[in-house]
Image (tube, rainbow, N blue to C red; front, side, top):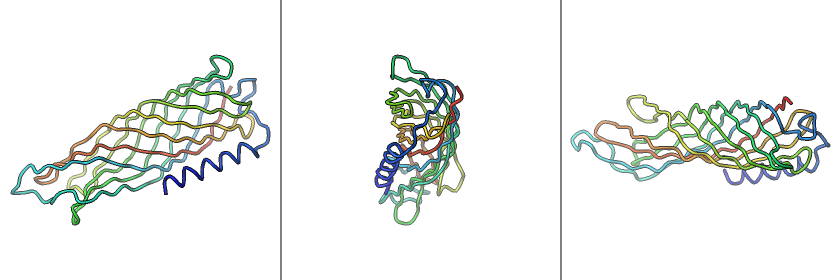
Length: 220
């Protein structure tokens, strides 16, 4: 379903690009330059590699990983940044964002399930792209994320912020003066976390995939 949603969003964005009226995202000849603020609604999926170890055979309650479950969720992010055309249509920008993420990844032995859920995040990105017209910007991005994950299925609540490197791509389409539509796909590989339950130890190594759609206010 996640792949079908990516295809549907890409088709919608292409139609918007073709059918939208001529509009600039800013006031000058480089409409995506300068400061901007934005909001994205997120559809995210959490996956995890997991390993299991018995710490105490007399108290362990888990019989080994027999299946995994990766669920999707919804969230949003507020962000701001600055960008400029460095040479002709070539564009570079830096931005930061605060977000709330959804999605749960768990492992099961057929009876009990243990896992983690994505939560708040702080992102820092660098975007490199090209303004291919007065209202369309396409770009690739790379950056760093600190995302808080909370435990699921454990008797004691546990949480930890996990750093990770992110990469992706997206584009903006000017739909009104100073306002652009943004669609973006980002993948993040997070650091691992180990939590214990009774005589069992679980090590989770999560990754997240996020599709974002929202609006940008350019303030030049």
